[in-house]
Structure formats: C-alpha cells, structure tokens
Image (cartoon, rainbow, N blue to C red; front, side):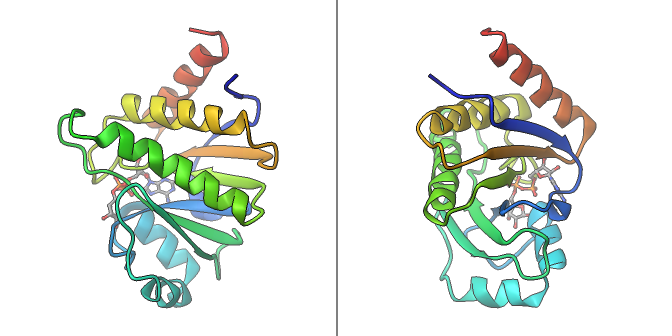
Length: 176
Ligand code: APR
C-alpha cells in the first residue's frame, strides 16, 4: 500500500533545508550547471565540485551521493533526470528511476530525512503535472517498504509548482 504519511511539501530554496540529504537535479557530467544544480554548488562551495570530479559522471536515471560541505544538508544525492521530448521516449521510466535510485542510495547511507526538487521540470522541460505524479507515486510506493526513511520533502521554488504538488497530494490522499 503506497505510504503518503511521511511525505511533506514545502515552497522555497532547497539549499537552505537542514535535512540529512538534498537531491540535486544534475546533468550527466556532474560538473554543475544552472537551476538547482547551480544553486547547490554555489551554496556547498568548491569542495562539492572537487568531489563530483572524482565520480566520473552519472547516466540519466541513476544517482550518486556526495557530502554536502557548506550546505546545512549532510549529503547531496545527484540524480540526472530525462530531457523531456514527447513522454513516449522512455522519459517516465527514467524519471521514476531517478526517485527510486536516489531513495535507495539514501537508505543505504542511513539517511532519514531527504528533500527533492522537481527533477527535470526546469531546463529539461518535463511538464510539472506529469513529473509530480511520478515523483509522488514512486516515492509513496518506495516508502511502503522502507521504514528507515522518516520524511521526504518535495521543495518547489515557484508558487504554481507548489500548487500542482498540493493538489496532486490532496487527490492521492483522498484516493482519487
Ligand atoms: N530550490 C528548489 N528548487 C529549485 C531551485 C532551488 N534553489 N532552483 C531551481 N529549482 C527548481 C526549478 O524551478 C525547477 O522546477 O528545480 C526544478 C528543476 O529545474 P532545473 O534546475 O532546471 O533542473 P532540470 O530541469 O532537471 O535540468 C537539469 O539544468 O541546471 C542544469 O546542470 C543542470 O544540465 C542540468 C539541467
């Protein structure tokens, strides 16, 4: 039975959250970029890039973990979302595996509280509604068999994105 009880929504800047791990919407080089990737690297400081350089990149759909350095979060889990084209080219499956692989790494590392941005919903062009449905549904399914994760926070930068998540979570909680 999918577990929605440990899911929270928040609006704001993910780099400010004091959680065990924040998830970065990275690209396959893991060498930084714009959007949330840029914000995380700016807040974490140069040691983050130095550690990322040792990882040798990351394929789309997979995840890698590093320390958080100057961030309040202890770890950064870098995952590479799909670039959206038409929704029929494997993007949903890749996006789903971003959430599963990030949460799996978190459990392996003993992470109890983790925050996600809206993976692929910026530069990579994934429609927010479709991506949020995958994010919430995949996470709720994962939490059903992962008691060690205490809280998963979905952090939205914009108000409209926050509303999409709020409406969707409300529908899921009322069984729609
Ligand atoms: N906190 C929370 N969410 C944020 C923040 C922030 N500080 N900054 C941006 N976002 C949101 C965006 O509004 C968007 O909804 O994160 C979501 C993901 O957008 P992007 O950061 O553009 O990530 P993505 O669409 O996955 O594209 C990844 O962009 O930054 C580059 O290096 C990155 O090449 C990669 C690509």
